[in-house]
Image (cartoon, rainbow over all chains, first blue to last red; front, top):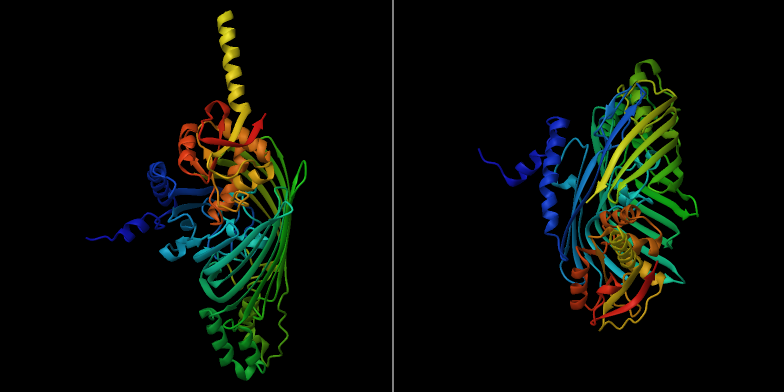
Length: 427
Length: 140
């Protein structure tokens, strides 16, 4: 029996069962620590991670961290996979102006492979202190926390607000970016433009699909001091493929054409390929003497009927006192729902098909509000413990961020409570 | 008993001297003669990692003796080491900026500064050598 190195490496992360996988990850991590001892100026190995347990009280809506996740806790279950993750990063300084960065990231995904697990893989050229050029795979910079959303130790919360970040599952972009930064009267100014392609995965309870997004172009403008930050972001892209489920549904609608006079429009509404995407974000942070306020407001728009415009945002107030930070987050997401208004000749016969059509066009219908209260404790300089309670009010048919076991079943209005306990670390 | 008290007082004095007078230093060939606090914050928090003449700088941290590091960052940005680490985790693991190179001891920092004219570090005053130049003083 022969085994390639790749097979051996990935066998560590094959989901035989969760406990076995985490034991293997832990052993892998322990073996990596001595490697850190060899770190020097031109070779630096580091990492981050989070172990979190989530309890959900809803039997209808299962919690997931983003729309790519296919499994999560329901009805009093406690899940340790949905928010736990581990990242390993290698920084190699090739010369005074040239660096190479690679990062592998492991989380509760269904499938592990080099492509999915490689979060960062880029060359960085910094000819002067003002200019920086990167080419390769970098963290996508759509919203305020997009490029560090999984680095749990970087923020006091146990997770980023799901209303804002749950809808975006892609973490990386393959392409390049240019950043120019300078100081002006004590204010650090930074502008970044980026371009490339990415993959956005989304799933329901029993299947998972993805779309490629090509021709992504974006810009970020940031002004900051140590006390405050203000940033604006705008990105556009084009969806590059249709999903198998949409194509299958379109085919079924075509077969029902004699009973559905407006079937062509319905089929067009299921087309994703060629549709434009726009992401706009304004966010900031202000450090008052006693509290830190952070806020962000975003809009996602598309020419695809399935993504009929999503507005979301959050406001967070945190109060640090010695090693403790107490915080509050209010977050929301509001989407325009597609209302079926076609006249069909035999509504009873077509009822299942119409339900599937409506459900598909509701796939990104996210209409909910969450109030979160939490506590973060600095165990040491690189270990933090957090506890958070989320109270989410989900509107009828507005629970697209959640897992639902019966895809075509009723999606009633509901209030869901989550309790999350986490330990985050870096090394 | 008196001897013990004297020794304790002496030890406390040494300790406060060590933590209370930190010098930010560069190699003597570095053209920078003085930095202000804002420039030092920019350098050590990854905002503008260059000397006033525009040359890219290499900030150095000390891994051992967290009290020295704690005093330095408390003075600089008023943050605990945990919050400094959180800040750097955000920049480092998003691939934006690398944190200062961390050397184990003050002696290693001094040796590194001696051979890298664009490096900058912090040491206690008693460890100042002739080939280093003080560009900022921290009195706590």
